[in-house]
Image (cartoon, rainbow, N blue to C red; front, top):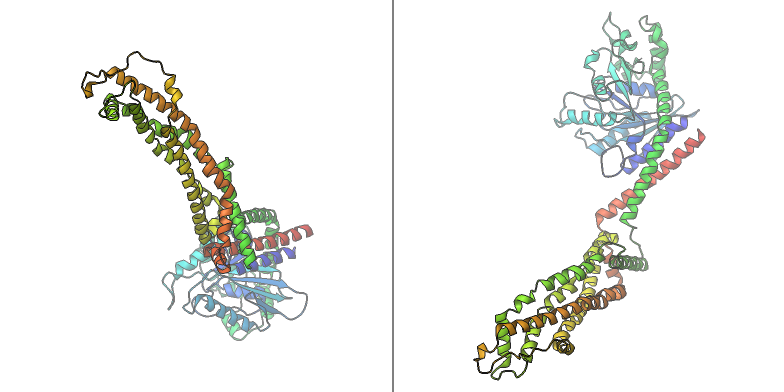
Length: 603
């Protein structure tokens, strides 16, 4: 069971090294899932003395005002024999055997983080103490609750400390060690007040009563210790700390423990409670309870770690691999990104990814609709037909049929198809492909270069496609299909009467017949172009893009030198930082997974 507390100690240290100490952020936190015991009390409640009694050493800074300004994660390790010593996580290779130096280092490390202006910080200090006189236990000493800011501290310090304490103890995995002085009314206890707010049923709270020996004569704390005045799920524990005079005289802690036990055993009001009083009993109870809580949390902890590992791996895969160091590696990475982009572009065209259907929509809907909007029937009104026919005849009217008039009418209609035909060439998937190539988000410079190369290449293909498409339209009005007119029914009436004036030469019925014939021919050509223009676009642009876009990328890359290649992989600093953070956090979770599985097998 001792391995369970050591396991949590290891994970807590790794969390702090990573910057995970339970604060909200974009990264998942493991700290909050770990069971811990937080020590809560007001200033002058005897909180520091309780901790020193449990440890059996003087090691905490003392003084007036707010002394504890950062959480102190105190990890106690029981050793069989040998000299007692302490280690700080921020000084991993240094052993402290002088506990006065430990006290000074706590003060110095606090100032290094918060400055000397008596500010506070939620970044914890990790202190491990190895001694034959302790039990395996981890406690988190929190800043003492206060009601007044001292000189040099901001007015918000009172609320800041309360917020920090509440943030620690409101977590469901936190066991609360509420320190209250017996010589003050329990109703005014800062520790009990804030504990009740976050744990109203007292299911996670251990009550510790200090300064029992300093109560007014004729009063005692028996009812509190018996759980009658304020009931908690766990029995209250009373302790008798050293007085300030004892501290000044440097009274030995072992002797102080012995005197504490004698006090409870010899005081009539507490004699019946003596077996569960004192700092030694407090340490044992907390150690046993912490082991029990950790054991019960292991399945849930394993589930959380496994789930988070999957999430972190998924996010790392989404962000992409880090940049290669050598030129060859950089070139290979860029080529792979180009291949990825090229494949995504092809997938859009081939229907594996959405987007290719937009090209078909252009061919099947937009192009026919744009031709229909040309409204050839209005273009072939009686007045326009008469005007073009008479202009085509010139000074000498036609003999049999107005052939030149027919040609001009057909040409004027077919020329207008160039606009819709040109628009059909401009369907573009390049931006969609770029947005779905994740690596391009990772490397903004490469995104610009690759996008520019792709646009240039597709623009060249688009121009070729446009030429071919417009050529199809030009061919239709450059050479008319004679068979269409030969198959028309012959009319005995030839139309014009040469005795009439030039502008009365054709009657409306005949002009309507010409308009109808021209419209039929134009519709026939439109039907043909509706099939041939998509073929031209696909052959000259879509097919060519699928075939040669990647070759164009590689040609452009071949023109660049080593430094230019490196500049293409200038990654967004925010992405680099997030990848590093995710990788470290993933390593933490994997190590925690291995440690927990090893302990679980031992159980």
